[in-house]
Image (cartoon, rainbow, N blue to C red; front, side, top):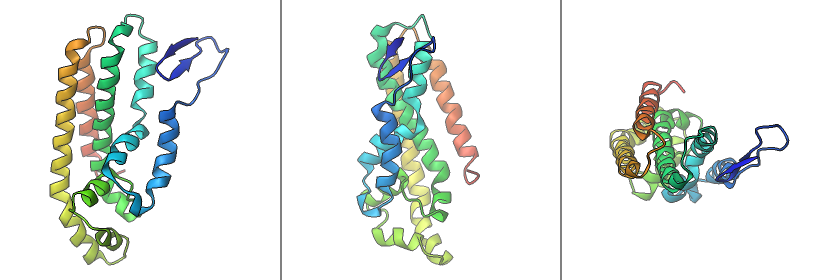
Length: 194
């Protein structure tokens, strides 16, 4: 059994993979966030990102990388945090309009808009109505402004990863960043399709 972070992997089939606290949070948080009055952007950033599974994937990849220097783990974990935020931002940008139709306001797009007074609770309630004119008016308040803000946040996370990469020699962070750029392109290309 080899341990890395919160995850234990038994490569020989003698054990199990326990849930990490991150996995529990990703299951619990969206249920809690369904109540519109509980929305805040800090929790959306902290808990919502775990839905992306980034820490789990990175941990698994590192466990299968014999060249990885465990002394670099603090920087890799920090890089993973920023990567997870970037993946979540891409997802938020590409799905928030569809989520309106589903009356799902758990996206960070909505909590950020509420916290920064771009939208009010009354606006969110208007999004729940079938009145297309009222819904479109609310959407027009969000769309251009909020996406620009979130893409700026994506770029800030990218720069933080670049800065942290100076401390990592056994993982190709430049390739990792190229992968994150591809993920964002996929999100933007799939807007309205997922």
